[in-house]
Image (cartoon, rainbow, N blue to C red; front, side, top):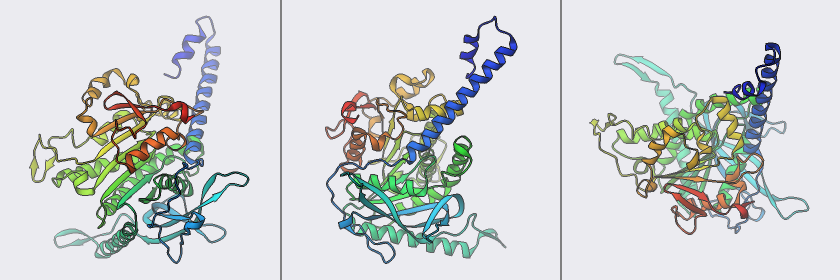
Length: 456
């Protein structure tokens, strides 16, 4: 496909040598464009974005510990982090986490400080301290041979139970002093460092007025290999993290005192979240439950999802498309358990140039993050029509951002209209069509962000 345009342009009168040279140059050009877009994909994901201007209402949930202290007067607050990145020690002996994979899952507090930029009235966020609280045993967990066959080792199970109890205790402690008994989890995308992931989560939390317990789930992204090969390394690291992050989300969901769980992901992180949702939805279904009933998941939000449209559909609705899946002891083909307030929201932009690089690399029919009503592949339109109408809109909404910018990949925080819309979704529990949402209906469940001029 890359060579189809050069063939048309070269003409028939040129020699084969000239043809090969031209094709080689054009291939080099397209490769350079792809690498540049991947560079921007990482840059957009990691760049600092100014937080929204909102009332500075510090939540009572901001906890003070001996190792990480919160000072509302200075705008410092802390988040809970969960990661399978390998820990590193900086020159000042401060703890952090790098881009290498760890064979264990760690969690703790990351302190976010808000400081004013010199000569401006704008605030910026920075990571000021990291404190590890607990760690799960190394994977894979050990097994032992018994007279009845293989069994998980008692040592590994005991260590796991202790770590899970410690993580739940930390979540419960934060919930007990939070304005809202709800947890917001954020999963970042390609090229993000530990600090960048924490800062983005901090901006989301501050946009929500620090009324929620906020958690950053951060996987080993941003490693070596350059922007081209680094993308493939990150892609495999994201797949490596699915099992760990699923385990973490399940433990969070089963914490006493939790009323609602909101799962947010950006770019490459949406593929991680889609895989997690696929597995959790199947777990819930076979236990004769739904993700809302079992895990209290109220919202799943994809920002600029870097995932193939067909792959996303296959993962997110695997249980819907498998009537042979056991519902308890046996299949019940027509049974769909009550979904409650569970809702999927997808923010996309057909002008997202960074996702254009992913489309080029993987030969995707369409990246979900570039979805628009008029861009649906012809053979997908019939399937999409099954989701049309107000009834299905209770479960899913696709929201198109028609704006652009140079790359147009980090608009979920940089664009005021998009940001205001997802804040209304999470904080105000406003459904699409509610006047508090800055979107207009195209044809349900498709919507468009309405205030592009103000946003830019």
